[in-house]
Length: 164
Image 1: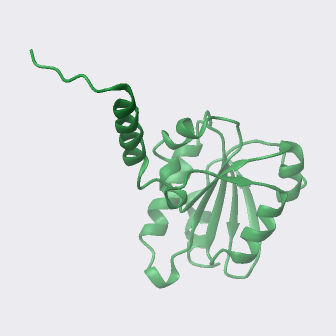
Image 2 (image 1 turned 45 degrees about the vertical axis):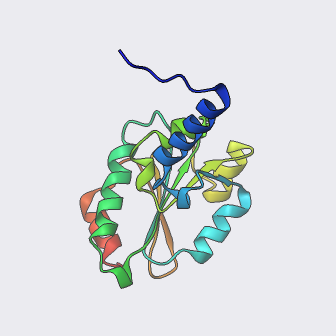
């Protein structure tokens, strides 16, 4: 059997290059998750195109993958001129490699991770939110934000995508 033994530096450089290549094409413009602070929410509400959705998730959330994938697929089927953005905010303190290893998180146009006091961050988003996931913020064309906890009913998702 034939084997090649790389010098340690070369081996590490090759491993780093392969890791970077494997993560290419993931969410958040290939830079990995961005910190989500108390100022981030106000910025997102003011800057995202409409309709857009922000899904607050955790790495162990049972319903989150289906919600994220369903919204991502629906946005992909929208006309490009009317296509909104899908933003995912991961609330637990998982390592970036763990987050990026979940295929459903890679479907997000932007990917954030909670940074700071979780209770203060939740209060900034919605004072009544108790931390249950998925917690979905639907940003409609009327500059309003509707919140929903759990999987979205199909009719509500259709109405949201139609701008109602």
